[in-house]
Image 1: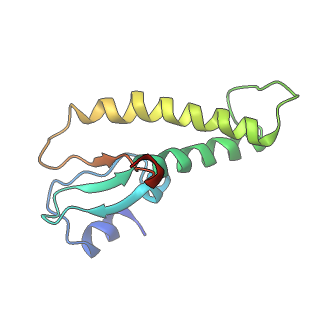
Image 2: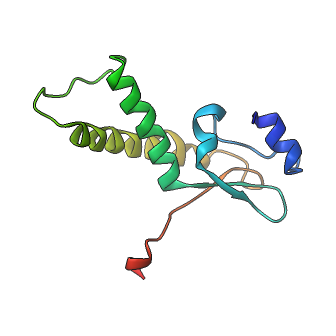
Length: 116
């Protein structure tokens, strides 16, 4: 689904913003607000989506960071996940402060039921 199709299907309010790089981050969408002004993303799903992309790039030899040869795929994925978290914190969450609060995306933290 393209961003235009998403906006039409969910009858999103004019001016509603999606995160940039639609094809990558649409996997993080968990809903929309009742007033149709905001797209709601899961922080964890965004991180997993970006980490999966980073890990694929690593396997394809396109990832800009080199890891020690003795790391397992699980350890490398963990490093990719940490890089994804850093990228989301710096390049996504911070940038939302500069967007129109009436229409900017909402990113929610998932709560593990064990934490309650």
